[in-house]
Image 1 (cartoon, rainbow, N blue to C red):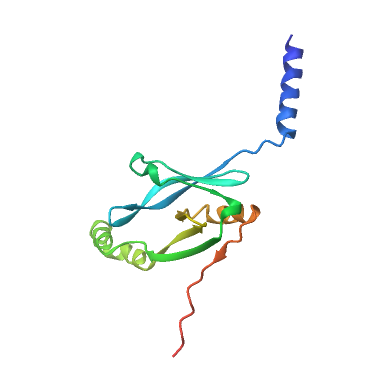
Image 2 (cartoon, rainbow, N blue to C red):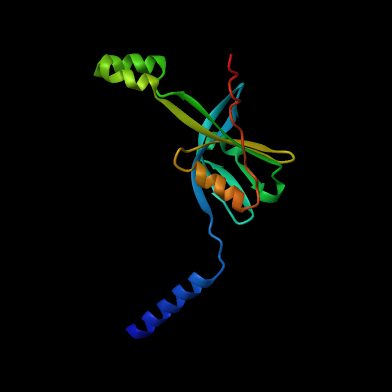
Length: 160
């Protein structure tokens, strides 16, 4: 009896391993959504399928802004990044008071990178903030699905 179960289990594993079942890959991101006259970044999941991708929003308030694109419909995909100080003015003052000015001083000069991916199709677009640990994998996913991702670089500052 146990020999049959073992043989059946091995056969099932072999069938699953050799079949061409496409599994979706999920990445944690933030999607820029409209909120009245402002835009907000909300937690979302980028789900990459074989011929399309979805941006699934976690908060019920913004569910109507979920996106669904076919890779073949994408006209433009732009990657860029921005740098911002790790501590804001208020955060720097609070940190300096709590841990001392000497220890907070290095944090005033550290800049954090925000990675952005903008997707444009014929009638729809999405602006996504990617994670610092997954932006390269997401770019590679788009490239392997036939979408060229353009890297938008900051223009070189003119030397005087």
